[in-house]
Every structure is written in structure tokens, then in C-alpha cells.
Length: 125
Image (cartoon, rainbow, N blue to C red; front, side, top):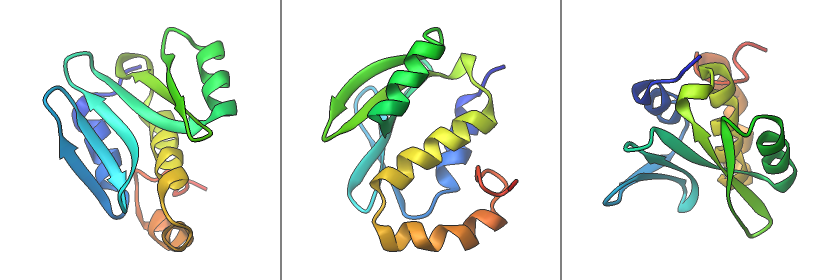
């Protein structure tokens, strides 16, 4: 069970209107100017926006894979260790992070996109 960094980038790139910014030690991902994720190549980890409830559940259920990053604006960010997660679960978490940041009109447009996208967590439904 492990996700390579190129798989993570494919998952993120499959989402609509994602902007990627490069920092000195990390990459960040936004949708229409609102940040939803980070990637740190040195540690092979990603940071993802989640609800506070989801943050607590992930960290308490599998602390070897997830750790609390910070809370802000009513959201809880989690660090995800890529070596401890499967691509399908990571896809779901990335999609949720994107959905929590994307404007409503963009989220409403996703079902058609999700049906056509093999990396989408909703394409298997």
C-alpha cells in the first residue's frame, strides 16, 4: 500500500481548475484562488483540507498515516503519508479537499466530469 508522487499529481491534475504553485520546499494547490492542498517531496507527504470531524477521525483511526497539520476557518488540515495510503482513498480525500474549496457552481459541474474521469472517487459509483 503506497502512492507514488506521480500518482498523486495525476489525481490532482484530474480535477478541474486547479492552480499549482511552487514554493521553496513544497507545491501548493488551489481552485479559484482557494488553497486545498500541499505536497512536500522531501517527506513524501501531502497536506489536505478536510472538515474538522474528518480530520479528527482520520488522525485517531490511523495515526501512522495521518497527522493533524492545523485548523483554520472551521477546517482541519491533515498530513497524509503517501507510503501508507492507497490511491483510491487518497483520490477521495483530494476530491473532498478540492470540493471544500471550490465555489458551488464549479462543484455542481463536477458530476459530468467525474463520470468520465478514471481517477475521480465518484467515477466508480
